[in-house]
Image 1 (cartoon, rainbow, N blue to C red):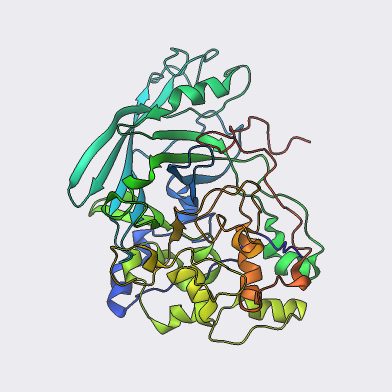
Image 2: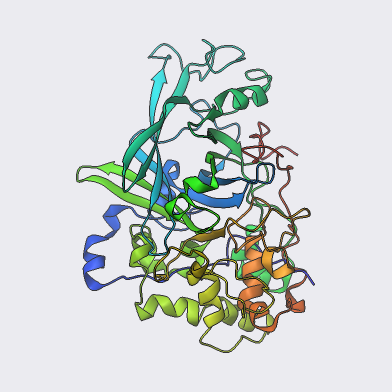
Length: 460
């Protein structure tokens, strides 16, 4: 049976935080730390720095590479002019990779942005005529970016002056938006590609989950709340060896992936967003800690009982029991620790492969439990992907990394309800939210995420 209870409002379990007393002194609300789809108070007022989703998967058409993606600016209404949407020029956007299991980044890809404003004070327009290329004089506001790659050996510039694909202002202004995107994709030295720009919101869900879990009786389902919205994407396609420990993906195929944003403040750059596993800060971290969580690095996700308890004794199964009468599995939930903090183990219910155990990395040391996506690059892309990923026998899917089509809430709810313990899906959750995929098809080549729409969300 399939699970279908929403994707972004109930997953989590990927967090354990070293939130000591001294941490709270450093992470007061004024630091503005938060992440995901408006799930924390401070970041809800700063959408350009709000990281909505992170993806990591072996590229289906170029299996010697991996694709890494982080999306920002939730709920972009396509007709949100005249200023439309852009990255924050006062921030550093990062995708980070841990290749040896110590929860400290070994490779960091970082984007910074600057504006080329051709408008001055003479017009309110974003463009004053049709745009047929990224260099078109009719495009009055253009963003450029610098991309660097940092390791223990230093930092090098991969792209010095890239151009961000603009917001899709409509068919009269941009009659061939696909051509604009194609022009914005740059080839990286040593192989790989990079893209920065607007995309379709690929996350699909019925967010009426917040009305007592779909109305308390699964009556409020079947509506893709995010249909029609756009986001801003940062995407990379890089050879596997570029992010593997010691540059050897065959010997060391497992990596951890997460994204952060550092925003400039009078005290210097401050981390204001952190995202790895979907929905961690949104529904696992209690309200009083949401603004603090995203200032932490994964290596701080150690063992404060008040937070670790959210994994070993999670809240969601209790809600399912209270609202739907579904019996909660016994605690402590070591199966969830394996899925969300350390990686999948062979004994973990229906999971038949040791996908994410850091022991797969021959050169790695001791694994430090932490919240991030973990991807085993040795698992080949599925010929027929299943949206329920590993729980449905598709070993390349979530929680082995995350693909665009993975139904992460359904997967996580099944796991929390006990599927990972029993080895079979929970029939009581089979109907779910009845939103089983994105409203627009994914592409077959990089960056895979659909082109941004230009039709109002209110259109009928």
